[in-house]
Length: 77
Image 1: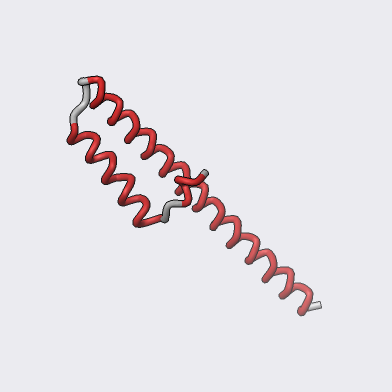
Image 2: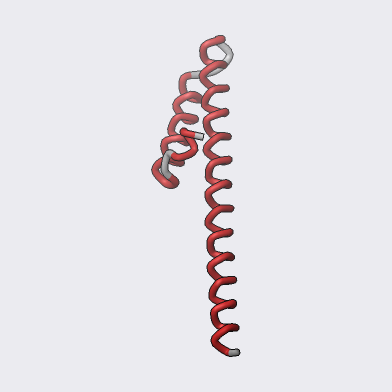
């Protein structure tokens, strides 16, 4: 009986770990998508004459920092 409970506990632990990893992945993708949206808005504003190149550059640097920290998977979704 103890072996069964140990296996069940181990399987539950694996499920929790996988769930946490998936949540982290989804949160990273959302953050990346938000940064891309901000970059697009900054670029559009710059092209319309209401934004600045500095704002676009800052938004681009934020995207690049996110890619360096989390990878570029959010760019393909």
